[in-house]
Image 1 (cartoon, rainbow, N blue to C red):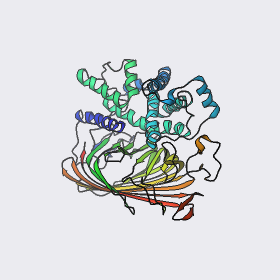
Image 2 (cartoon, one colour):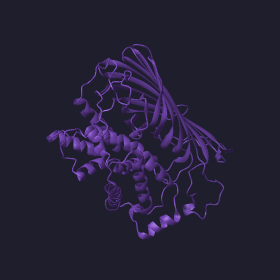
Image 3 (cartoon, rainbow, N blue to C red):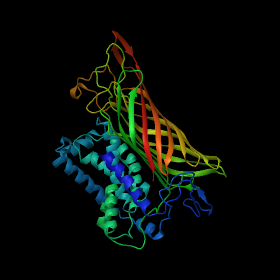
Length: 537
């Protein structure tokens, strides 16, 4: 349900924005005089991006007003959200973890942090989403990106130490504020597109409600401050209307596994792809003035509704090449990655041989940052090639394991690195678009458990406070797509996805086929294909 809500709210403001701005011809290169991000007055090309509307610079009065800081209000909103969430868990959900007391708080401080065993979705998406609420308590009260991260850290620490009778979680104190900043800034900038303080009546009410749904903390702050009904001569948008491209896709998808008789699944699939800002701005140190957002949801038996979320947010950059037909920019980027799948066919595996987990892959990386290169090459008037390369450090990641099982956890915690690369070719005035991209993740679990240790003194005879199996995992995702324009803004999109997961388990002993295998290496492969209609706003 949360995936559907976020999908709708990310689309709604862009649609509203499109209805109130002049739309450019999709076959023309959008050019602006005195564009965003440039100081020399030259024109900027956005390639063949289909912009939602003509970019508009923010009003200086709006910027100054929204930079005014309100610390006590931001702090009260952070604390109040935690108390309200605890009350809901305690008195509505009757969650066992919500029965807190002074004794549970003292025990949390005495025991300290440990790795938890919640679902991958809970730890890698739900907690970062909650972190975005804390983050936006600061962001909506005048604080910048980095200052708002302190509210996310404080809100997460308060929840872990005071608001649960379970031991504080090591992974949550990392994923909640860091992943929360990525989601939070995307939602903050999206809500900024909705608001228009010049509007009145039904339009004003609709915009305020939509902004509240997108960014609850900003909506609440506007109500408390009286901004929700105050009319001004300016729009109130902190960022104006930057260059925005949006693609909405709907169609069918099919999944199957390689090498193993696991059957096939088919169903509907939807995708939202957003590109925000100018990737080739001269020089920038404003976080997320450029970002890309991708979300995939699906309706497929045995498969999770939310299958993929990716955010790439620029932290700082500098353009290094600016020639007539070649442009390139280098910078630092924050990444948020979430891939989820489930069993295609339920059955008991053959115990006579090593069999990969019937779930093909799971991966979450809510805390990732690294360097990136963006480039564009225009050899001819109607041919544009866009490419990128990113190298990231994975501060925190979780990846599927074939063996470790405890409570809801079927994945190992770890850290490592990721390499991403891709290229898109826009041909014949955007009539044909071809793309290929590859993402490689390497995750190392550094705090595994000894299979032969004596666990008789631990709760239920299980290892505690571990990251999972001692292992090294590789996950690779290769995707290719082809888009053909059928009519104006409508495209037919065909694509294929190839997933490889390989995990080497150190010191693990497995009995199969009457023999003993030490340090098994397990491979799992999956293929996906989709056919969709894509509408470009």
